[in-house]
Length: 184
Image 1 (cartoon, rainbow, N blue to C red):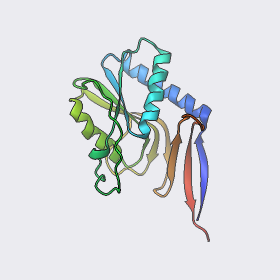
Image 2 (cartoon, rainbow, N blue to C red):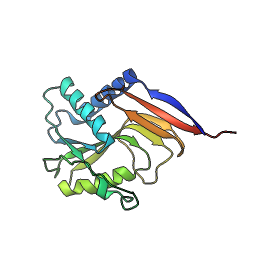
Image 3 (cartoon, rainbow, N blue to C red):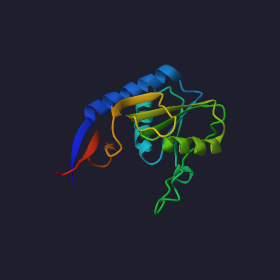
Image 4 (cartoon, helix red, strand yellow):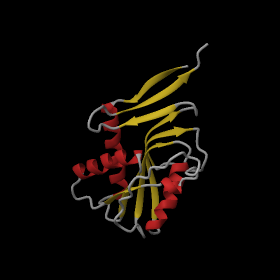
């Protein structure tokens, strides 16, 4: 079985998409005084860090608090996994009465977001919760969850994999779709 890899967003388009998402957030949240931004571990954190830094570059007066949340033990499949290596939750604020923007790289079945909503309640009862995702994999939802801010929507089937990569110490930014192809 071979696989085909298709580039969905290159480094330039990814940067433009992140800028667009930032401006949409600014349009809806003004100075962010009542808004907190939370990245979902592990992969949503890379996106949320990028967005938070970009927001502060666009408007240094933004007052939003930023955090990162591990949802490992809130997942409905955590007992089925071989070994869980939890990430760190760094939320040093209460979300009570705040507008929360959860961020993740890919929205697929909706189960990760459901777990994030459960984990979020440990920090208080927010006034509202919005969801920002870089990639929305349409037609694969198992739960009624929808994103408020979407970088790009793509049609995929369950055998396809979306890989989001953010430039870390090395590598390149981009989003790829991997499709397994059956040999004849």
